[in-house]
Length: 613
Image (cartoon, rainbow, N blue to C red; front, side, top):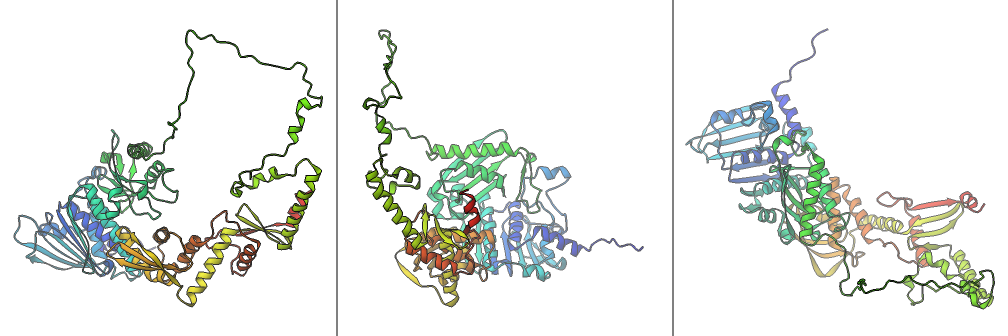
């Protein structure tokens, strides 16, 4: 048998490594900017074209590299940060991963111009897919200038699976925000297609949050600071008013490196319990500091996931820190005592004579003797009606038993007659509503029960889809324009969705990078909250990575139908129930709502018979 195991060529090995580290253009931005930060740069410029697919350029004024270092930096496992295996467990720098540059060079066309601070001449290197095309002296500015062109040009399959430009650029903005927040001492600029999106000067952490996220967060930040032997926590959490349905303003940093931690996110969310809706996300910008030996940042190639030595203790400390911050600003719910009234508690004194209370009894009382003195008739008195204040809203289904006929036969007959007439009316209309939630109607096989809210969602969804398949949905102008201020990432996503939203009847104008004005809404929208709807749309798209040209229409129709449908508890007339049921049964999918929830269930005749045996 011949030998079949061979060593991979360096070019192939580098492309495999690139698959771990370089997932999309944002990955290149992250790796190169982290190298600039490690080079102690005070200013970093990021220039992007076509969401990074065409060009990613990173300029910094850091320490630069000599000719030898510039060449070695593109070799696999080359690094200036690690000398032995123990160094992996005490990492304090950012771009320590040596193969990052090799991975980038394996899947793109890369140029580097660099010069150390105390040199008069720099180095120019050009690499295409791991092959060095040029290396020569050059006159350039101090620091480093990386130019990455045509990402994945030599791996068409990888390039084909990149998302739309808007989606890829949102990922770049996300990486930029993380890097900017973690390094407030550095000046950053971000340009996309020759348009300046960010120009941020060195500042305090709070000002950096405002500059990076947006001015809408400025007055909604609460300082948070806790120090323990295990971990130190600094930063800001948002007021309950800063919570939004769409995520994005949640940032954890460990030793100034961004990290993701669903486990610690729950610690923060738990602190906001009962302060914000369950489907909203609190804003937070939290910097955690600990001994590097107590964490492991190498559990994922991108180093965004971190393992703590004692996660449970960190969870408790973080939760307590957030609760303390909220409590300090009187935001944690507390028991509200009524202090306006006086509560008199008698206090005994030495002069007070305590007496045993007297209990009076009637030794001649006979419970089996019926007479006027025993007041037995009070047990047959008609119970007090829950409608005594003439307010029908006080009546509930549980109160039906209190509306029984009185003890008098002369009074019973009219009540029973009314009950018979109502029963006959129900049979004639064939519809009955329970608790403002369910519609009951007899069918051949038994008793059909319909969830009226879900039924309404299905009917609206079908109408919207049919309408936009034929023509644009009608729109109505709003009396007062509603201004919507988003962070930059959400702003880019909304710009991408504007054509689809317009098709549904929304008229939204973009003013700057992250401010929008809603001037028109679908004619069916009436008094619904436009901002809430937009946030829900953005959150769904971010979670699902939807393709706006394909799935987004169904998603928009689903969320719009949910917002336009009736709320629980709405009372319907027989005519309205008849109309709703008729439209539902004409649907191609009457059994399920647009989100896949059951609309109709039937209790068959056999089951009904069993219940009366």
